[in-house]
Length: 513
Image (cartoon, rainbow, N blue to C red; front, side, top):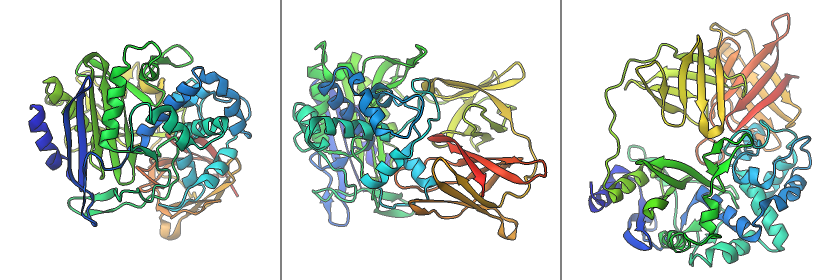
């Protein structure tokens, strides 16, 4: 479809209170369009000037401020070490943080292990305590990729301390003002925006309601900007594209893992390919907000999508990109038969459960990472989606996730029923607890720690001594994913310890109290 048709299609394809989108070629604005309401209760229209939480798109701006102030970020490595006083052994450097290769466990995932209630306050004091409590990593810095919000909070705190003024001022002086983003602000307190713009959760069937956010976000997800601000950012990128020291040129430069493998994420930007052309970009999501921006340097083409609801902003951005390029989004061919290896496995490196099952439309659902992934089956017995590939080899099952520099041979989980797992368990590293009850023969589990007592959730049996503790809601945004509980028993069959983790926070040991 052409661009005009695509624009008219978006409000119905991605329904919600409101949205705003822009498409630019070079510095020319091909589309600048807003619809609906920034605040439906107060009847405030959504316009290109409405403030919007761009969420994790903030990360590239944090890295831009860092590169502008410190062209060699390694100068900040000592500051990173000082922010993690309890971490023994290897400590990540500033570039590891900027590339999401730090090995740290994500702090809003760990907050759930400390018993945080859903939508609880999480500010400077809570963040500092979680950071101070870090004593280990879940992989060596530079060896893997894992999305970690506090990587960018640490960077923004360090930059503010180095500059002797708050990060909001530093960000405005170093990046926002030079880029012409006149109304963009660091709106760290997520409870309200000064112009009344509101984020919503829900859907058309259940209705939309204002989303509650009580997290203090800074360099990880704190920036608020209008569509016009984002247009200014894209124009700034284009006008500085040929400068050898251009800010976006440095942000989007190739990055690598420690072993030399190319990394598809760096300086708060994802690197990938769409329609056969290289792109950079990032999505953003807080409870009630979804955003996405893409930049195709070869075509000098940029797309920005802002939704104040849970619409699929990434898919909408691809719709607009296809329309601007005169391309069609790929359509699926008839699917081959499902592979024969569906079932439950363990990943020996992360310690997490890996579950494959069939969907009604003939795809394979993978439950391992941040959320369920859909894999397309292939004629050769493999299945994949461009990010994850699973295939049999010499009687084993291999899972490859190149974006994480991660390939593993999965171990088939032993089927069967588990014995009793009820009891109180404690993680010495976190000084946190896990309570499992078995009243009426049904297992429930809940976390506890310095943030409170989390709600009890019905545990899901996966295989023998392998369970999942669901996390359907968390502090904000999408939850960190199901927690894997891997049970260890003594010679008498008593459960003595649990190795617990999810994609964002792995390898934590809980001992029976």
